[in-house]
Image 1 (cartoon, rainbow, N blue to C red):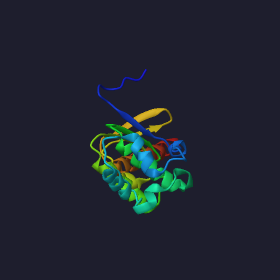
Image 2: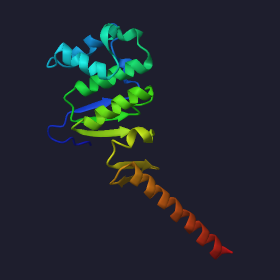
Image 3: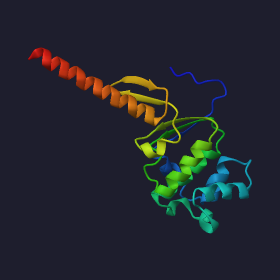
Image 4: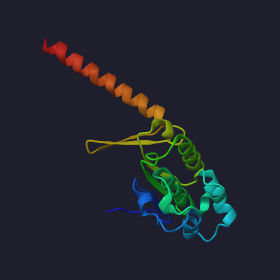
Length: 171
């Protein structure tokens, strides 16, 4: 049973979330569906930060590339009232400049983030705690990516030393 904290509003970005966008709507209409509180100018500004400028905002979602759809879906998530965003491999279809935009948006996000990703360069400036799930075991590392990688390196050295000790006892 999952227990969600009081006043927690969750938004989830799945790897295939771009497929759930309505192809008949244009990008601006897609954003307007999320919130009525933002002006057209504010929406265009947000879309501009996701590289949709000028008449780009009137492109139908159906004609967008996979990466463009991903950027629309990510911009949409940042418009929600969520204070907890869960992102599953958000950089899969993004080019380098889109990754940088998303990275900055997530750094600026005031709520909590749960990021599932193998993209260390993307995670480095964002993450302040790593939770590793391996072989049904959950391990928490209260620090950034560098701390996590350092601890993993230490564990490897320790495991190698144990094997060497065991082999020398057996011989």
